[in-house]
Length: 87
Image (tube, rainbow, N blue to C red; front, side, top):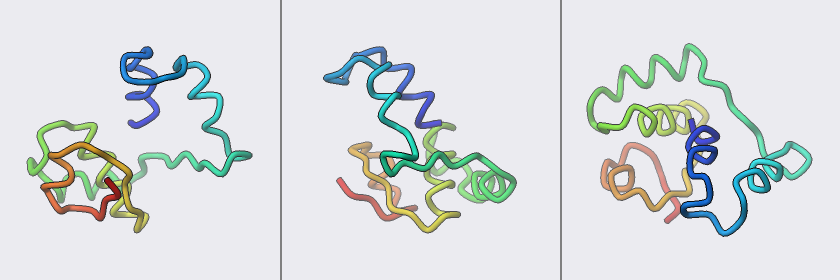
């Protein structure tokens, strides 16, 4: 979902063109793209409607399943306390 969100920004909040940002998201640069699998889908269901945005639920569920922290300024995610965040 995050890659789709980045692609959808079209430079609205990015200092660089979206194409350049997506080009840097590469395993050679230390990034890992994690698929939404059955475990993540189950976690989305477990989260329920705590977060209204289905994209946010998928992102939070993925972080929970993989034991990761999120880097976010999204106040709904932060206030939900569903996942550790770095603001």
